[in-house]
Amino acid sequence: MRISVRFAYCTVLAVLVLSIAAVAADKPNITGWEKGGAYDKLYDPKEADSFKGRVEDILDITPMPGMAPGIGLLVRDKKDNKAETVHLGPKDAVDMSFIGLKKGDSVKVMGVWATIGGKEVVLASKVKKDENVELKLRRTKDGMPFWSMTPEERAAEKKGD
Image (cartoon, rainbow, N blue to C red; front, side, top):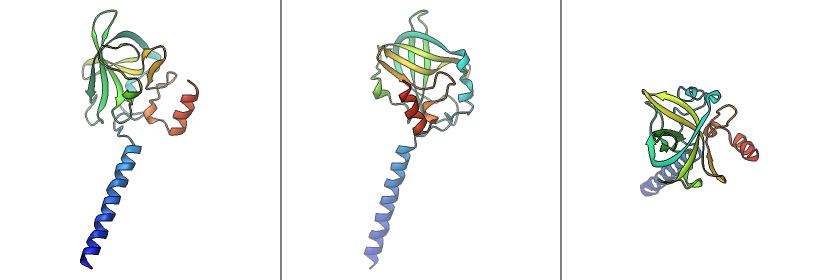
């Protein structure tokens, strides 16, 4: 009797752990990256800018203390040859495999400039690898991050491509 109760308890615990893992996969960790948060408020769509360059590195970033890990790029600006740090978004929500970006690729970065920790960075809205391959991160009109949208909002954005 004792063994079957222990087995049942372990089975329930295993199912619970697997369920939590499944929920975590459905809900990416975007702590600190949310719409309306301190980091998001740095993004002013009226200040949109763009530049072309070459990817020098793909970076793990944490823009501000307490934020979930993010992903960024170090891009050498074609115009002034300066290396620029580009913030893409939270690591759990940005799918880099879609664009197939790697070191050495030429890109066009669209976004806004912000100062974080005394350093100028670009908060990206879009990264284009070529005419047909781009990674959209924010809505152009208002800067709404795609990772903060509901599935229905994301679907509507895809239809508008």
